Image (cartoon, rainbow, N blue to C red; front, side, top):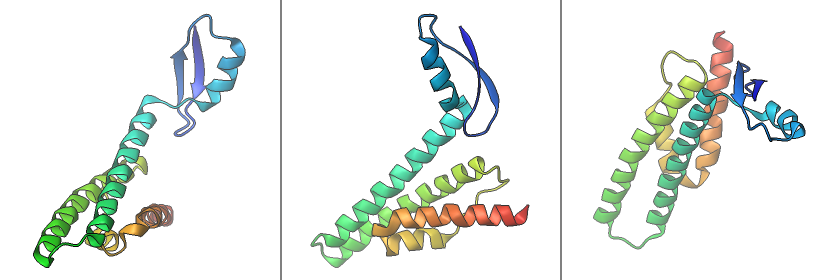
Length: 140
């Protein structure tokens, strides 16, 4: 049986299929929570990018607490920085796609903040999202 729904994220209309033996009360209660495939894909990409950044920041915190000699510490920190650059660029691309921007907004300062305060990575990512939304709202 088909059911019409409105994506809870982008508000596009869609149609989904459910089993004939599905109780009608379930269909009515679940329909408002449905999202389209595009929004689910973007949300999955977003969560994977955030998870990668959090994991890299966690590695950096652990590295700083490890008892390593200076050259070894610098080399490992350099590798984490390179990975953070790639991860934050990917994050910026995803955020540009989610916010319908023509180009991603990324600066080296993003990585510098994460390297300087890896324990505050959640706050840094939320601030990026807030500033991105404020900037796009002001531009329109």
